[in-house]
Amino acid sequence: MPKLSVLPHATLCPGGAEFEAPAGETLCNLLLAHGIEIEHACEKSCACTTCHVVLREGFDSLEPAEEKEEDLLDKAWGLEATSRLSCQARMTEADLVIEIPKYTINYEREGGGNK
Image 1: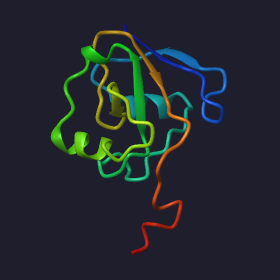
Image 2 (image 1 turned 60 degrees about the vertical axis):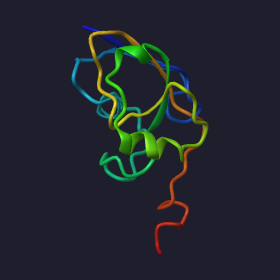
Image 3 (image 1 turned 180 degrees about the vertical axis):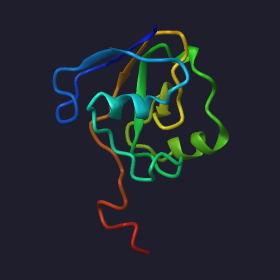
């Protein structure tokens, strides 16, 4: 079974993590299932960027992002060429290494969603 490795994140996963991850499951669901409380303000519906991750290894093994995800990623803090929304990216049979960015843009938490 493939492995998902998470690089250390100061608040969500200070020591980093590594666990087996079944193919077909979203990265967001896998992180949450293993106690890594990544933000997902839109309830994983591909409507925000709070679950943004950067793939450090294995990016090319993922299915390409759909247009809606790519449009949202343009708004993500710390966007990189290997960025994905973890609610949309699904494990394949390849091992992945991800980094959760230090910051996120959460309009709901910051009071911007009350328009």
